[in-house]
Each structure stands twice: as C-alpha cells, then as structure tokens.
Image: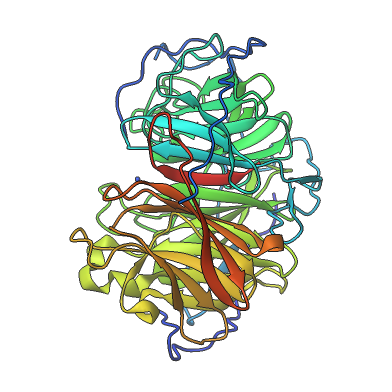
Length: 491
C-alpha cells in the first residue's frame, strides 16, 4: 500500500480581485439481452445537405471486486487555494497501461488518445428533445455526412436496446474506429462505426439498478472506465453493483470486469456523483458533483485523480469557491485543465458565486488554480457545468444558463484569463437551450449546439477574425428527425 500524503495547493490567483470571484432520467428500458458483436451494418446512406442560413446485465464476470479504492479523507486546510490529498489505495495487481501523455489536442487538428495522435475524422452530434435521440456524423467543417443514422427508432442485430432521450458523448473519443454512446436513461453503452454509423456492440452498465452513467474514458482497446452517477441502495445482488464508482469495462468483448469505489473519495456528508472524466498524462481526472442523496446541497468542487495502471484513486483535488463541477477540457500545450462548475441550487441567489470556470495548472507540482471566473463576473449569472472549451490558454469559453422567462437567455462567453472583462459571443433565443461547445483551434473556429425551440435549432459556427467572433454558418444537423443538437465531440 502506498503511504498517505496530503498537502495544500498553491493558488496563482490570489484573493477575489475584480471580476474573478472566489466564491442530471428517462423511462423504463426495453429488454436487453447479452451484448452482441455484429458485422451486419445497417447504415443510412442518405447524405443531407447542410442548411446554411432488462434481462439482468452481463453478470458472467464473477471475480471478486478487489478494485475498490480507499482514500485518506483527513481534514485539509482551506487557505483559499485548492487542496490536494494523496491517498492510500489498494494495490489490485491490475496490469499496467501505456501512461503516455494524452488529452484533447485542439491546436494541431488532431486528437491525442492515450499517446497516439490521429487526425480528426469529424464531429459526432447527439440530438434530443429528451424523449428521443438521434446521432448524426459531420465532417470537420460541420457538413452533415450521416443524418440521424442511429436514433431512438433504430433496430439492428447489434442492438438489444434502442436509445433513450438522454444520451451523451464521451469527453474524449479515443483514437479507435468506434464511437461510444453513453445512454444515461437506459444505463447502456452503444458503440457505432464512424464510417457507416452501424451499431457494433452494446453493453448494459446498470448491474441491476439505474446507474446513470455520465462519461466513458477509453484507456486501450480492451479497457475503459465509465463514471456511474448513482448509488445502488440494494447493492450485493450481482457483481459490481455498488454504483458511486468508476466501472471498469472491456470494450472489445464487451463486458464488465471491475469497479473503483469513489464513495470514500467524496467530501464528508455527500455522495461523489461522478460526472465527466478525462485521460491526461496517464492519469484519469474525474469531476464530482458532490451532492447529498436528495440533491439538496453540494460540497466544495472536487476532482479525483485515478491511476489506471493500478485502478486506484491516488489523490483528490478541491476547488475552493466552486460547487457542482462537471465538464472538463485540457490544453496539452499549456498543461491547463479547465473545469466548469454549476454552483449549488440550494444557495438560491448566491448560486452564481459558486458557479464558474476554473483553470488548473497541471504543469506545476502540486497543481495550482491559475484562474477562476465565477458567475459574479458575468452579471451574477450561473455557469453551466455541461460544457467548457478553449481556443487557447487565454481564450476560454463558457456558457451561462438563462431564466425560465428567457430573460436572460443562455449566453456563450469569452472568458479572458488576464482579468479583463468577459464578453458575450452569442445569446440564444431562450434559456436551457445551449449545449456543447466544440473548438477547432487550428482554424479559430467554434461550434455551438443551440437547441432553441422558439426558432429552428442549429449548429452554429463562429470564426474569430482579428480578435472578433462572427457567425459563418448555421447548420441543420438533423433534418430527418428534426431534433436539436445537444452534445458534440471530435472523433
């Protein structure tokens, strides 16, 4: 067992100066049989022109769960800086992985997936009205190649379950041929062929309860992590059914092979609520929403750091002044990790103060908070924890959530890191409409999913020219099902 260490993180942004404050299911699934690997594609070969104006899950794996991580959750000093705790964890004898540098390389027109850099093939877009979903495949410019090629009405030899209305994409799509769809509503993973859009494999990850998976991190062709948001109150019926964890799966089979319990890594008094995750420099960073069982309160924002060579939590990283943190993005050239936090709904009018975008410098040891832009910097609006992106280390992008009255609506912001005033890039027609932000830094281009219902929903494309953003295209990415885009990812 490793010795336990804890130490405080230095904070590069001192105090609360100027604009920088300090301060998630659908339906009952149809029957799901054993995972099927099929070679019978059923592609939709229609190319759309862009508009430019349970039986029980697989329990055949019965090996004992020895991959539960344990964490020293001793009291850490809150000095206005993040706190890094280094835990003692069980050595499960897991096989070592390639721990080469990884992350989303937005500046070289490529995706770095675990040390192997491959060219961008295109954009995967998930559309939803929260009753049904459809996936389209786009080229790098946003042109529709496959429209709604897999959707909630799709049947195939490779699918025992269709898609629910709550499907997300991984924060990173690894440098493999398959795209994984994370179905939160039905607690399944579905892998599709990026060329034909045909389903390849499917795996239930609910293990007898509604696990609400939030992200998928592929570590190799035979190993991946799945963040499971919910706790199973009746755990013990089948293998790996605890919840509140990182589920370990073998995508090549597919099957469940283990889990890492994140319960001990949560702040005192709350559940971890594991949300989004990223593979960065051989470690997996997992954002915790850290809320209580009734979603009544959130603890201070926290990341857990997992060593996939050991399947252990090795440290935790607190983000003081924030709560309810989720979306992550990494800038490898600058070694900066971006974290979007939504704040605590229970704080009422003070929610904006604990919402924001954190810039964490992983290039120093211990990591340090380099910048924090809270909702108070943008007119006391609340930041979304569903998306965050950056064109470069000085041009971070975040979304604030509007009011049910649509005044204000959702807004896309440019958040400078030098304490200058944030500026609006785009204002939607209504609230709760803006989804993912995706950037092509090499082309100074930003893609924004705008799911407004008061006008036609579009994928909106912006380019930065001479420091200013201008709209260059509005693309209807799902003309067949006519669903609004919500999630976007490079593949």
